[in-house]
Amino acid sequence: MKAPANVKQSIDFLRQICKISALKSQMCGIFGYVGSRSDAGQLVVNGLKNLEYRGYDSWGVAQKHGSTVAVTKDTGKISSVNAEDFSEECGLAIAHTRWATHGGVTQQNAHPHLNSNSTIAVVHNGIIENYQELRNELMAKGHVFLSETDTEIIPHMIEEELRQTDDFASAVRNACHRFTGRYGILAFHTESNTLVATRTGSPLIVGVGDHGYFIASDIPAFMEHTKVVQYLDDGEMVVTDGQSILFTDLETGEEHPKREIEITWSVEEAQKGEYAHFMLKEIMEQKDSIARAVNQDEQQIQVIADAIRNAQGTFLVGCGTAHKACMAAEYFFSVVSGHHVNVTSAGEFKVHHHFLKPDSLLIVVSQSGETADVLEAMSIAKAKGAKVLAIVNVEGSTIDREADYTLLINAGPERAVASTKALTGQMAVLMMIAYAMVEKLHEGKTLLLNTVSMINDMLNPRYIALLEEVAEEIQHHEDLYIIGKSWNYPMALESAIKIQEVSYIHAEGFASSELKHGPIALIEEETPCIALVGNDEVTPDIISNTIELKARGARTIGIAPKNNEAFDTWIKVPDAGAAQAIVNIIPIQVLAYFLAVKRGKDPDMPRNLAKSVTVK
Ligand code: M6R
Image (cartoon, rainbow, N blue to C red; front, side, top):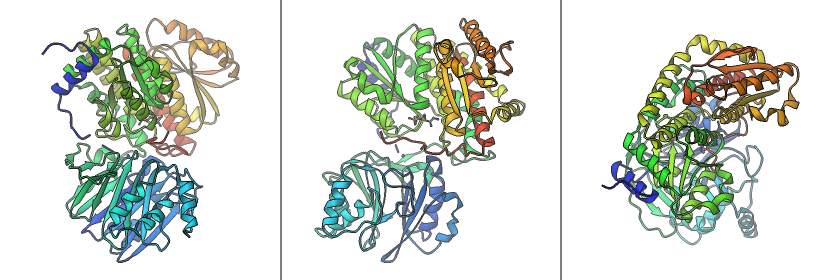
């Protein structure tokens, strides 16, 4: 076949050379089970514990006992709940971890919510945007609401619809037709042994078990029971009695056939193992996860590189840490391949849509594959006829499924809210593409694999202990600054995110050259300042900026391959050349972890944050 000459041909070509699963995945704190097991209550409580990493402030469970619903809900952590307390015989249960949006963190606002006579139980992720109007309508009909949530209108609306039909699933469908917004809903009725789920925007995945069906917002909820899944797409509904399952179009009711897919992540990968926290485990895993990211089909990488070269404008977007991977890639493409790409935070992409043409390429980067701002950027690009390439970790996620083509980074499950191994995997993949653009894929791959082996040496117990000591020394400071230049500049921004989100220290990252244009005024005696340094042509500049900080009294910490008198403390990193950004961020991740632990914070579940940001 002729080499692809434009983005569209490249994507088509990629589809031919690779086995793309027609059905790709999932995502915030929903879990339900129906089947022949009699421990449904216990089962869903344990499943919720596996979804803890998403971030939440309250939890709840509804069990169907004969023709009644037993609801238990509370604020606080599900980890302290004893699953044995839910051992009463039960074959159908739903559960939820809530992160407050509409209404405060109270027991009353926690899900599940019930209708007027407590016969319908519902858990819900997302937002029902027109809930106020619907609530007024329902109140006018005599419905009484016990919470401040948008969710509570759902069981009441289903109750209203049940006046028109005997069929519970039809009542749920008709109720959903009244809702606007993005949601994932699980519901059951005491009159039937059926679990009903609908999805528009908030991920839901079905687990196919030997003794029934599981429906969850994320696979770890049921991974210990089954690795066979079926993905619910937006605008679909699923109904199961535990023996059979039916997927339909939420709008029309038309049946949608589904494939069963076997997931490859192991249960062990999704557990903490010997580590005190997922964050540390995931940091330490990078010696393997980067290697997996690098181990891509070379032909695919080359075709993608050619597509970027042929595109009328390549745009890279992501949010938070993934956005910093895009920013680092801007330097890779500039320095390694001499090619300009346009990088924006996904949430800002809307403003730049004028520059998209049908022959433009949008590259979206995401760990979860569920980030709402990224999905919006994809819709904007598609509306302009542009092609979308996704670089994601979670196979089958919405971004994976909606992209024209996906490159998986294969980092394995990332459960700590702070993204670590996904970032380095994303950067490794983007760096390989940059090398492939100048026909140097093998050089790039060799560099990255050498870097992996240097990271393996670096992450030894003595090194980790040194970082713990540094954390001990600076833990009481409330301000911390990080500087970088070239590809270390996005890593300075990423360092700030990592330290902020887990330790709650006010950390800020700057391009080192910017210091004298304002931020240096913040420096006081002993203010900790970290310099991310490489061994390249910008090194003299950043060393000189570090000396300026030291002269103003800062306590300077250099993360660098070589020591320098500019550093009060030197954290040695291997000299990784163009891959220095990947190496330099790792000690920062460890430092952020220890800062959190020493300040008594839970690094896996930072306050106010969720693992997947599925709302805009
Ligand atoms: O799942 P995504 O990579 O799309 O998530 C993007 C951000 O929400 C995420 O990177 C966030 O910034 C992390 N908490 C950072 O550690």
